[in-house]
View 1 (cartoon, rainbow, N blue to C red):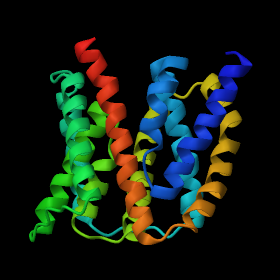
View 2 (tube, rainbow, N blue to C red; view 1 turned 90 degrees about the horizontal axis):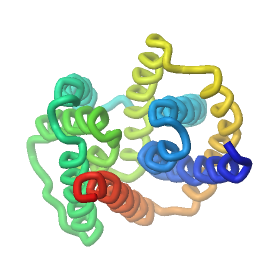
View 3 (cartoon, rainbow, N blue to C red; view 1 turned 180 degrees about the vertical axis):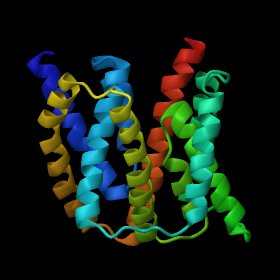
View 4 (cartoon, one colour; view 1 turned 180 degrees about the horizontal axis):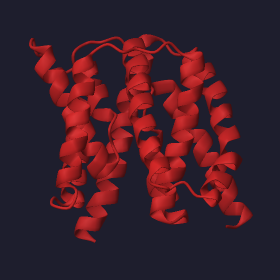
Length: 244
């Protein structure tokens, strides 16, 4: 790995985790397409989970956790099981492309004030968790679906951010535990993690500074714009594989 490549990874880590600190989600999907072209794909996934777990530790120490909406967690674990079952059956390219387009359309509508509120919220939250869990396994994108649903139902941005932080702390911890148990964390990956971890710490400081300058409506727009960008990444990543 050249010094230029390592410097690029440092800047990408800083940028991705600044977004994660501000919005509560988004860092993994920003990093995974690029890191997977720099490192072997499996090593990239493990490295990203290590970095995610480090910022999660900072969140646990510095932020207030939000364990409400247990239906999302129940749906999420069911979705993970379904995603594992479907992993070798369905086309990742088609699923990724459809999810990317769908999220982009919904986020754009919400950005312009259109919403589709439902009265029976428990079935909605179970469904959101299920889609999130399944898509996390199939495409690596397990956060934006919940953000869109909570935004659509009118939850405050502070609630959405704290909920997403808590939800991803649990999901990422379960994923890292599985990687450790099955021996997927190598010394080489740990060395890269140690080098990049300070940039995650710097991202927390920078993100909190940015967050302090945003009011609720501005943060809502930032969250929806992040979802749109994530959707574009999905469309490019999986659409290119489907049509290229």
